[in-house]
Image (cartoon, rainbow, N blue to C red; front, top):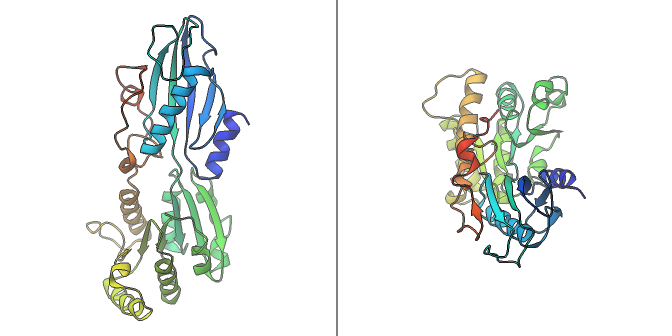
Length: 302
């Protein structure tokens, strides 16, 4: 499998990886500029030259994956007998620079109910690097033509029309973020109950007033859920200071709160800022004076 197929495979599996690219070669080296490889948590694809160079890149890439960083790095290797190494000597005589670009697994967000507010919310979220599940018990709400502006976005959008949406909730991956905005309070309650019975979701939000939530809390207790579990559901949802009942206003408010929950960074596309932990000490190679991210910032979130 080549590096491009490997990246596509990791994306399909919702797994993170690091793309390593030889960006500059001075003198003799095992591979020319442009050589690429992909490093996953348990496998690698393609090669940038083998030996200490490649082993050190793999080691560093996996340290980045373990730390959850999305900030690119450039490493420089001197291929001579005097260079400090961890994985054997390479005496080609040249100098090689390698760019490491992390690709984190996309967060999964599921919106239950694609009515007025759900549709506007889906339009916003579809512009972000997410796996976005849209679920509604009404088949007409899931018409592909109606959702054409949503499916044309950056997100990997998955449309599901189901008369029993709570069963769909049970199929979501662990850590998924769920937003419940259906047209039916009975459906909302079943989804809240199903979410609490799972107990492994990243977050759960329910649209509605405090009065609605007070009634739901009583019913969820009657179903055997503890107060601590019930408190994991957020209701009402959205930014408290953003008033307005228009669907677009509510959607903007809910999306902004979700971005805070996800910790999406404004300076690195698709990178949860909360995941940017400090990396372990550098390997004994010669990195650039400052990371590329400080000199070539990526575009903001679309």
